[in-house]
Length: 78
Image 1 (cartoon, one colour):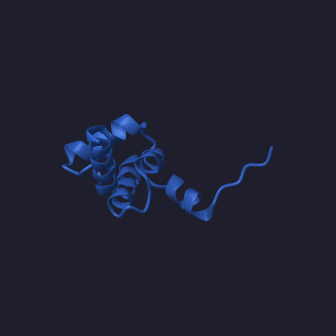
Image 2 (spheres, rainbow, N blue to C red):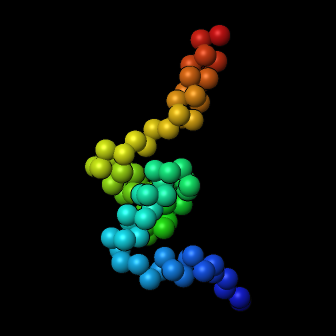
C-alpha cells in the first residue's frame, strides 16, 4: 500500500500540539477549512474542537447555517 502525504501535511506534523491547534483555528476563522478538517489538523475530535472554539468565543454558527435554518422555517411555515 502506498501512502501519499503533501508537503503541507509533513510541515504541520512537525508542529507542537498547541501550534497545530492555533493553526487549525486560524484556518477555520478564515473559512479556509471546515470545522471537521480543522479538528483533524488539530488532532482533536470535532466535538472537542467545537468546544475549544466556543471557549475562545469563536462562532461555530455560520451564515450558511443561518440561511439553512431560515429556509427550513420558511418551508415549515408554508
